[in-house]
Length: 267
Image (cartoon, rainbow, N blue to C red; front, side, top):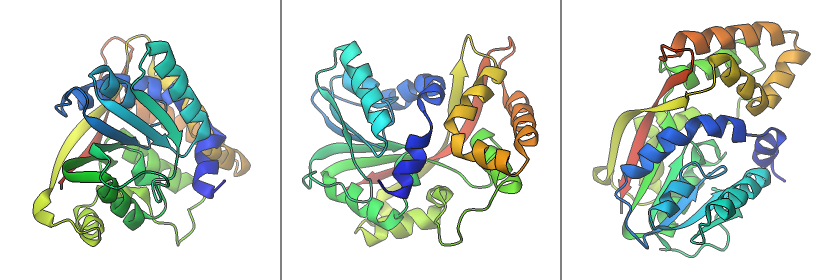
């Protein structure tokens, strides 16, 4: 097990993913998926975009580094009767066993951006996508005022700093880094388009307090660090304040926006 796998397997992301289903469906709807299209969902989690892709007739392979999320995705696919959807454990930095030019579309919504070697990730996404195909990424944006970026800023302010040699996943939200990484993979900047968009953490029957409670599980390593440093109460309090401030629902349910950079690479 590598360090990245250990972090994602330490907690259970599925309670957070439940808040991401609505926007996951909307993203898939925007992609123009056609029956029998071959799609790779990289960093797929338990299938927030993989399931709606398969429900639209695509032949989908979901790959994630966390074995618990792969298992959860398999259960969801089986329950939905989606025989054209498979889930595999794999590393976005090195897609072992995946032939080149395998997919019409490679999609990664807030997944591949967390892999530790971004240049390898770009090369692998380009390698496994056929000429004429597309790569679509959703990446969080550094310095953005919406929820996820502010959550990460809060974590950085209160908790231990990451090692100085670790490349922040937020660099995938910077245009120059995207151009450089795909450029090394052989892609011209003319074939890269960037659009700012908004993802919603939504639930009609859950409050922001429920949402924060779910984040406690998702960010289990972070909360452990906060506890050891004696800052757990402050962290939880400020996270609750952030969720309430960002919430756009008028009836007490959860509707929290998180802006992201949508990257489309045409091969």
